Amino acid sequence: MESFNLLLQGLATALQPMILLYALVGVTLGTAVGVLPGIGPALTVALLLPVTYGLDPAGSIIMFAGIYYGGMYGGSTTSILLNTPGESASIVTAIEGNRMARAGRAGPALATAAIGSFVAGLIATLLLAFLAPQVVKLALTLGPREYFALMVLAFVTVSATFGDSALRGLTSLFIGLALACVGIDGLSGAARLTFDVPQLMDGIETTTLAVALFALGEALAVAAMITPPDALHRVTGSVKMTASDWQRSWKAWLRGTFIGFPIGSMPAGGADVASFLSYAVEKKLAKHPEEFGHGAIEGVAGPEAANNAAAAGTLVPLLTLGLPTTATAAIMLAGFQQFGLQPGPLLFVMNAELVWGLIAALLVANVMLVVLNLPLIGLWIRLLTIPRPWLYAGIMVFATLGCIGLNPSPVELGMLILFGIMGYGLRLYGYPVAPVVVGLILGPMAEQQLRRALAIAQGDWTTLVSTPVAAILLLISALFLLVPIVLRFAGRGQVLSAVAGDSD
Image 1: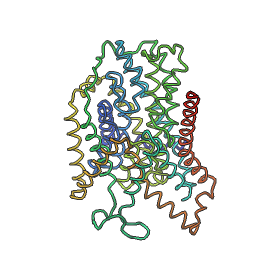
Image 2: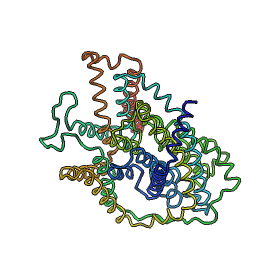
Image 3: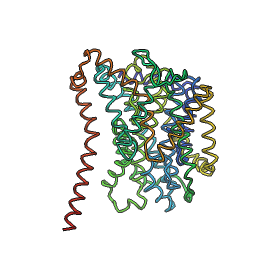
Image 4: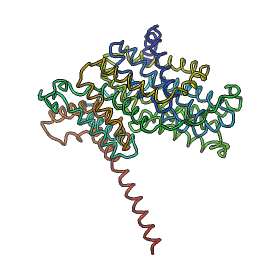
């Protein structure tokens, strides 16, 4: 009942004209960037970080969340019409959605994606509203040892989730942790890794790093390998769904929602995992599994609902514990810190109006998205005609001007260029960029909690595993690291045995 009353108070905040405008801008931008191949919500939020620096914190954060939700919506359009996912969570949608488009059923495919996203977003946001306070109550009971163990779990899962290799993910993470050491040590006051450069005394700006890695790095990577787009499948006929389409879709929407939300809430979850799992479930439960691969509408409805529900689920660990589980969540965390806000249990106490306004605004944003998506399909398709060289050149100019406007310094410009080149190099060699940002943001927090725990225990390292919660979290972290290595060696051993058997 308390959560319901707080949500009603949040709605009063969310329905203010300026907040509604921020939400509308966010969902419109999010849908547009979701439609454009190769430009995801993380890049857009990173680009807007310096622009929103002087704006209202509540409105800016609500706009960022609207971009996240809108990006999940918009990604389905190019997946269905162009067989080119706008962001990674829409890869599964392309499997069945593009087949439907080729068969002249692009309209129903787009409709089930939009309505399924609306249903999933609505239910998942309500689950967020009622679940988050319970997580906050649990988090308030944790001490420095448990928080440090939680940070270690976040580091390991982020490194294992992003990219193809846990080793490469950890390498990216340690780059971020090294950058987090730059600046004045909060405990001793000593300068660390500043190389006598005064501008580095305050540390590396999260905004500069995020914009450089996501915007400049992505633009350079795309410029290095521009590929011609696939043929566009036009929307023919009505976007209305038949009675059969509704009957086959509504169960998939609900299943996708209840698969996506808990997976999005997990440290190692995310919309990608949720959408693939939803597709596998729909294929398993389908009355006509032979239709899968040839345009089964359940294969669009379920994964689209799952990836939108996962987006809401991602906000649970972000808001309650301050732990980002996706690249966009990592940039949103930087957005919170830009305004001097630290996501976590105290955020619900110190800034309750902002948090509940954000959750209520997501409900409003869902309504805006379903109204925007279906009538404006033609407009979103026209965005695909923008030449990529123009698009990414504009991104580079916008990113540079935004960062320099925020902090006009030759050192800042040099770091922006340096980190942009580093972002391109990481992509070139298959290293994920999100763990670098996570390391920079969470590194100082992990160091602070570690020092507190050791100070309380007078330097006794066994204190880190002296409580059941801390020990279990560290054990899970170790399993995340060791199990893939063991499985890889076991698989390699089986292959060697098979080769030896063949040679005999």
